[in-house]
Amino acid sequence: MLLASQLTIPTKEATMQSSPFIELNEVAQLCQLDQEDLKELLDYGTIPVVASDSDDVCIPSTSLEALQKASQIRRDYALDLFTMAILVNYLERISELERTNSKLRDEVAQCSN
Image 1 (cartoon, one colour):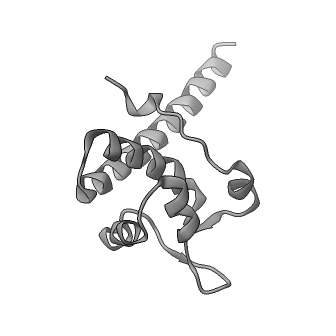
Image 2 (cartoon, rainbow, N blue to C red):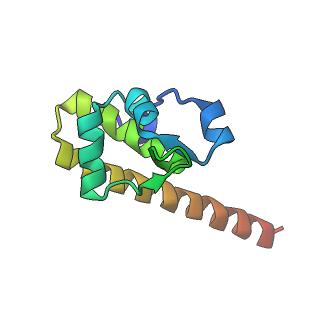
């Protein structure tokens, strides 16, 4: 069984580095989602929405990885969109906890030196 943390999905590194936000049409392409599905995820409140200078709707680039993983799992296991929305929230929470854990391990390592 493939774990979510084992998924590797290519991202547009340059896009993520140059801008903290990504337009919906690019997100749909990167996550292999229909525009309608992506808009429904936004309606569920799964991803925070930001308006850009060009009046296009954007999302934070930090949300892209969880969306890509959830989209891949959705395709692999034929999940419905609502389940994917829940999965995105859990994947983002897991990432947050992993970052916190890593910081705490670094602090403990520094204290023991």
